[in-house]
Image 1 (spheres, rainbow, N blue to C red):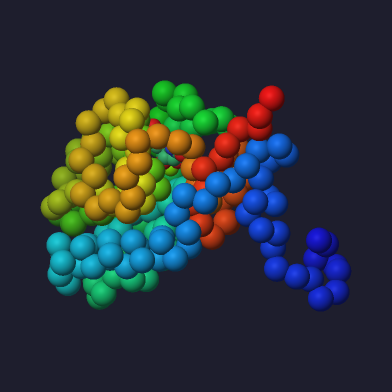
Image 2 (cartoon, protein in one colour; image 1 turned 180 degrees about the horizontal axis):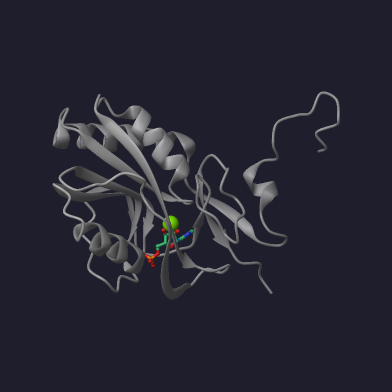
Length: 196
Ligand code: IMP
Ligand code: MG
């Protein structure tokens, strides 16, 4: 519907936004996610207490998860940073190349650092970030991932705070994209390819 239309209604249902012929099947509802994000925030608060903490959002996929997670934390000395890496092209399989295209803006040396990622899949992206950050001398370095996908792991990555664990499946919504689409959907969906 056009923004010029009067009395415009709410956005189309997720199922109606699927690529032509494809289907979006709900895997985690917005309520499932909200409950798990609160749980993760409690785990993170229990780990760090009120120690100064730098939470690092891995753009773009973690942007919505990160926004909800940091607002659920009680830490009064929280700093937010953003990095951008590119490991996936426009498809559903990793290209194998990891590029650091945006870095943190403040020194992380001597600080507790929590990397906040949408999905750890092969582990290549997170391994690259962990190795790069570890070399900068943080006081501690941990990972929070909304989804830990274990079926295609190639690089060892210890995920300290896990939202959901899955073996496989290509997910979209709540920040996760397929060719830049679906990020703004409220839940997490499996994208089923069109049949035939
Ligand atoms: P890895 O390097 O193979 O661990 O890939 C991690 C990155 O690939 C994640 O940060 C996501 O951006 C992307 N990715 C992996 N699986 C999915 C998925 O199911 N949906 C959307 N993006 C994914
Ligand atoms: Mg990502």
